[in-house]
Image (cartoon, rainbow, N blue to C red; front, side):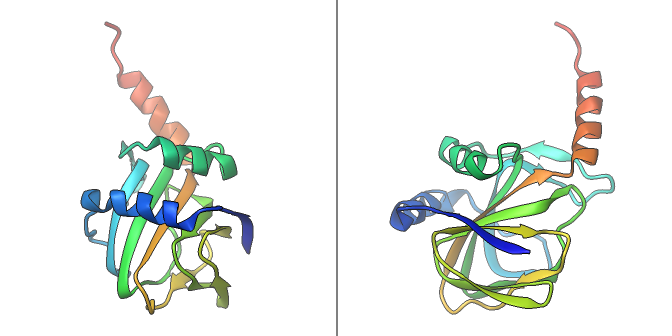
Length: 169
């Protein structure tokens, strides 16, 4: 399932916001992406088993947008792909929820469960993250904001452990 669920009215404003975060981005160690830098927003997820959730960069504007389409979001990535960048076929890791949301500054091809989808700049898409998906090499640079609810099974266990560690003052 890949479904268009909304649209922003001002792509250039979104592009400006993405560029304003560029100095905070870093390259990751993930081997499936290429020519990509990113910034984690909200909470980051480790690839540990079970996953851990760690505080990440906070942004009010991003929170308003993500909450409109996914009120219980916790995890987000702002990614910048150079020309020729993309991500190989994968399923999102344990710790990420089953549904993801994305918003891009440019049109792009998104392959989901073997089916290609021509996605449009400024459109918000919802997709199943546990099905194989990819973005083939891009003809132009692209910024994309992606957000998820956590996998509540792990999130709730994590928060119960964190609360037990807190000591009264």
